[in-house]
Image (cartoon, rainbow, N blue to C red; front, side):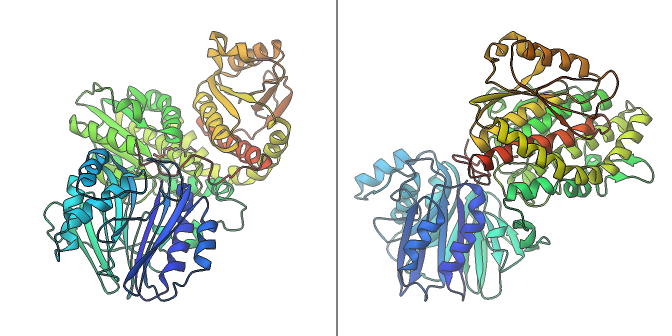
Length: 610
Ligand code: F6R
């Protein structure tokens, strides 16, 4: 959701900033822009649509002498995705330029008072209000840092911002509050950006910024201050070990496909240090820092919510901990009743999702301990949780979450085992089967993926012309059905519903007719006979059925229009084969229909607005 990069150094800044924006494209955007300092003047270039259109404009401009610049990809919130609303925005007095990710909630009232003072506006954005606020705060000859801080103290809402002034053409100012922003420390050059890949070709030394911090970078210096009183804050850069290669496509046509194929690795990496195959044991060391929970409340959004829903029965049955799972955007606005012994588990790949972050803060405010399950190192949720568990899945670039979900599910399963052992509720045999299964899962998955993709391609060609479809399952297959439908919607724009198979007869079955296919998740588990009955109810109403099931065995026969055979895994581990099948179906449907797989319309990777 909006990408920011700011650079000051010794290289031509404009191509560097555009390249950085390209590596932030995954966040989702609908317009872009850059601002660069040349001959003590700031030039702003902006374009609606994809970065290529911005590059076309830059190609006919002279900017080779600019060594300070900032760039922005905008995901529209206030005002349509037009060139006028694209960032950077320039103040109507003082010629300051600013880029912004987030929402300034009190921008209307600020705008009215600025208009009364003679400021003019050419966009509908809250960002243009903010840059004019900075200009307004600036006394003649006064410090820009102080004016910037004063304006930000008045801003209510969420922001990551970067600012340049023609008077200090080799300085970039930046600040964050509830939106991601990092500092990249180079040799004779420094960076600010929304995410690490933006500057990773130039430096691996990263300073993670906290809310309420403001930074000033020049080619030879970087300083961090408290927004509250501008007191300097000492920070240490951290070295990032992963390289750009792991954030690039590596021969795959799309990031999403690469990330689906990375799931065996993600499972291995997640299990590392947590599963001991030789001793047939598993534990999650991070949980030692927390008391055994009396109850567990899982809060998350989208795919991460589905991972939580999938894990809930495992935690209840293996660990005996009563568990509820909630959508963060609902939880945060309903004054939830939390008991003091309740642990709140927030799940977020990005660690920046605004609703999940708000849920975390509410839980902490109510005196609960919060455990974060995140993928992005140093993210807001990772920092604000009492304890964080990292999924260790590596950077996920495609907007649609894939390997992050399987890594969340592995960690959640291990947590259920850990608490199950700690509370004494877990049968030893379950632990042994789970550990053996997890140890062999990566190779099983690795060998199965190409075949699953081939099937997915066939079914995508057969069913992508439908106007709608169902994904149906029971037990652990119900959250997977929700996830299958979410993925089809977001990637191929086909309307899809995920439903609990047993709930169909309470209304949705009315939709069934020959042009409305249903994907039944029907592995050979204890609910197979029940799922089979639901499948037959759909067939009786002449609805086409695609059954995702295991190799045939006596007593587990199925009749369907299409049978999609997946390898059989132990108990809950079957989910790790069903999930990529659903992901690959949505991937293939989207490519079949010519959709933008890695950046579906209207979506952003990290949803930093509520
Ligand atoms: C769907 C998807 C989203 C995210 C959701 C939460 O493919 O990616 O539904 O799962 O926006 O994001 P995180 O996990 O970053 O909090």
